[in-house]
Structure formats: C-alpha cells, structure tokens
Image (cartoon, rainbow, N blue to C red):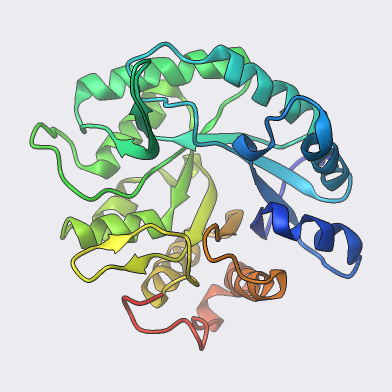
Length: 288
C-alpha cells in the first residue's frame, strides 16, 4: 500500500505476529515499522510475506546495520538491498541511528554512541548525505540510549543531534524511551534534550519499555512503556501536536493483543493527549 502520508500510532512488525495480522481482517493499524535487517533475504519466504503485508498495511523501514557513525566506508550493497525492498513494498521512509557498530575488522551487536564533538557532527553528516544521495530521499536519524559519557564531548546530546540534522538536512526519529534511559543513566535533564530537538524535523517517535537493572536502565524493549516515558510523550504531543508514533517491543515478545493494547494508549494520546492517562498496568515510575 502507498499513500501521501501516515498518521496515528503503529507497532513494530515482528515475524511471530505476521500470520495473525494477515488472517484477522478486524485488526486496524494505520502503519507498521519494519526492522528491515530481518527481511534482507534475497527471495524466499520472508520477502514474499513482507510483500503480502505491504498490500494490506502502510510500512516504514528501520535498520540497525548501517553504522552511520563508523570509520569504515558505507556499505552500499546493504543500502541497495534496502532501497530495492523499500521500492518493492512502498515503504514511506527509512530510519537509522546516530551511532556506530565497529569497523571492517571488528563488529559489535550494539548501537555505540558517538562523541558529541563538531568533528563527529561533520563525519556522520557527510555519511548521511552519501546515504541520502544514494537513496534519493532524506532519511530519519534516531537518538540512541547511552550508558556513559565521553570526556571529549563539546556539545550536549540534543545539540549534537540538532547540529547533525541541520548539517545533513535529514529528518529525525525521536526515541523518547532512549532519551529517558540516557537521562537516568547519566543524571542529565531529559527536558533539556527534548527542548534541543528541532521539532520541525521530527517525522516519527519511538516508544518502548526499558529494564531496570538497579544501577542503570537497560534499553531492552522487553516491557510495557514506563509511566515516565508516557508522561514525556504526552507532554511533547500536547506541546507540538500529533506525530506518527509506534511501540517497539522486541524481547519477551507479548501476544499481538497485548501489543495492540499498548498501541491504543499511544493512539489515544495522539488524539487527545490532555485527556489520557498512562496505562493502569504500566507499573512503578522506574519499572516498566
């Protein structure tokens, strides 16, 4: 499916839910986010299923494998696969992270934060421009969760993300859960971060659940959205208006019915943020 725009609250498409999504015609979801790394199989069942899903639901693409902030040349073979699949499925846009994941010799299965310096701004911005030139469109850049500060930082995280968006002329994917996790882990002001983000570039919002490890919060995507994250989301939508938003839930995956309950909270906030409370079963302030 394709349309001029997407609106409302979506969910992340996860393979265990695909058959139910396709079989139950009563399920109404405005759009789905596809973690495209899971579907980059040349031919075969996965891409066939994704094409079928795209005929019923609006899609956006998201990935974790480009290493936009890394030192090695961009993987244009990877980008070409994403571009081809995006065109095949009519996905509205493609997003990645303000992070790196190693170099040609050493890869990590994580999204590592960059130092918040002017040099890093120029480095990742030039790579975003390369990706955008190749894809023929702007991409969305997402803030990541962090667990330690770099002593060489020259900017706050919000200033860093805003500077990249301006230099690269890209859009942003604001992950409110990541912002909350970082603010707690580094004892920083979440509001200062949110105020630094140029809202005119925010095209999508992520909501997810963290795991409280006691000494720090882990961006685990294995719980419902926490009350503090819902509150920050409501405040942001109250101030700036509705922005397409979705629930990320990757680990300890719930039933589709439970995931849709969480999505409905976001949908209600997008419609009438001042009238909606956080979910009754969301739990304690720091325990999602």
